[in-house]
Amino acid sequence: MTSTELEKLVREELQSAGLWAVMEQNECQFLEFPDGLFAELVLKDGSRLVEVEGVAQGLRERLRKQSVELDVIVRALWNVEDVQHAGTALSSTGQFRLDTEAFVATLASGTAKTTVEVQVTKAAWEEIMAKLCASLPTGGGDSVSERNLVMRVVREFLAFQLSLGGSNYWNPVRSKTLELNELALQYLLWHSPSAQALQRHQGQ
Image (cartoon, rainbow, N blue to C red; front, side):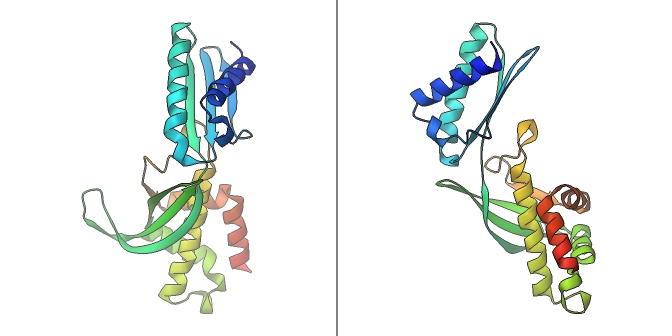
């Protein structure tokens, strides 16, 4: 089976289930490799994820019976709707992380919504102040101004994470917590055009 044949088959299956209309067709991809086929199915509405996953699972099992291996990723496109500071972060064991601040964000995908937490380490916070606080009074600012600036970086961090597809995509429904540490911040400022624009704007 070729990637073109796979795309046709997937389209037919989703159309039959009344789900093709919720797909972001330009984001979907269908590939063929020596050891099998790959499909990435991207939805505009996260509320239909379970249904599309069911169709994908059924198709995978049918093709396996025909000795055709299919690897499928089903994900939704999410937007950052709101970000709020939530105070000192907690560890997975419920202990306060005194060197880390938590921000809670609401994400939306069609009619679906979910909340996630970004934990910003002290080192990342200080790096944000060093790189981006030029526009704040006297090169720094009060705690509210600093927190608002970090909040903007958190929003860019979330948007960047949500923009990544393929096998390393982030599923905010199943993985509710991200950490923005110094290394992650450097990666963000290097790879995200939006974060780079923010850095240039703040430095003016």
